[in-house]
View 1: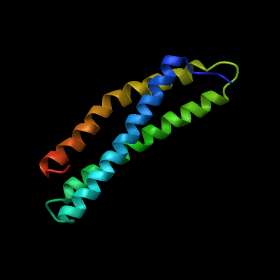
View 2: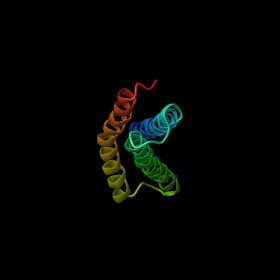
View 3: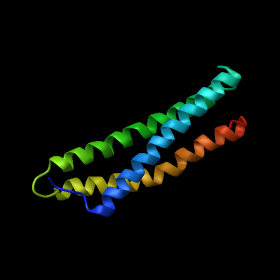
View 4: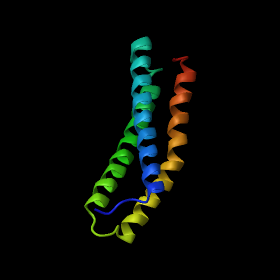
Length: 114
């Protein structure tokens, strides 16, 4: 089995953890907003935003998991084009995570959610 360099493996696990936390936080905030204020014309854009954030994080989580599986199946080394895709995805995810977290925080602040 081909293996990720340790540093790259750690980056991927950390990104997956962050993405999972984003899905959890967005979903929890969406539920809290709905339970406290219902589905109104005022809350709908915010409920949609939270759902959108979760939906943006899920494919990135899946992509990283698929890379891990593909690399585990690679023999004897990781193909260079796959490593390139992994690195491009990491860069993109690292740029998107702060925006997703900020979106969740903005909704929570706007509605004084815990």
